[in-house]
Image 1 (cartoon, helix red, strand yellow):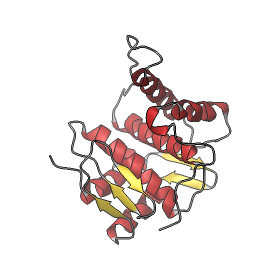
Image 2: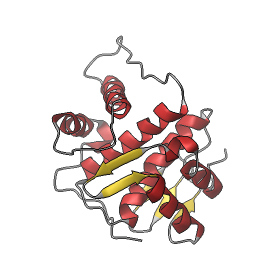
Image 3: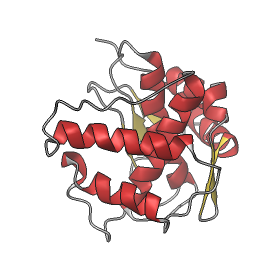
Image 4: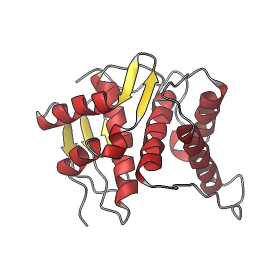
Length: 191
């Protein structure tokens, strides 16, 4: 099965829905200007893009590399995930230092801001039939909460605000993030 390419990442960074994402947090603008800088870093090879073989994309900070995911049926959701990983890369380019859990929440907010811009009437539905303590239910609830936050975002993110802290606490209980503590930092050493 095919994976998304370097050109798909570049196309995501120039997508008008991505360029309408505007978020300011602790001295860093996440949006059109930083996406443009990242696009140039990808073109000149400072940030590499590798076609991955998994259903999720990821960013490797020590290697300055975005690894894409396999092609899925929803281009909008695929681009949203690519933009999530591009946001990790932006934080690396600008040597933005926050705890890893904060970093992840900012990437999810970017991802859902993009979806709100891209898909008119986009909504997140929570499956009420799930056991509320199951990981699937917790993920659904997190996606709904981050979507609500992104939908109401006015451009400035206060990472000490109770709503943002609530997203961080929620993310911490999800299976793939349980290993992150307040002291865990990503390797954002610059590009």
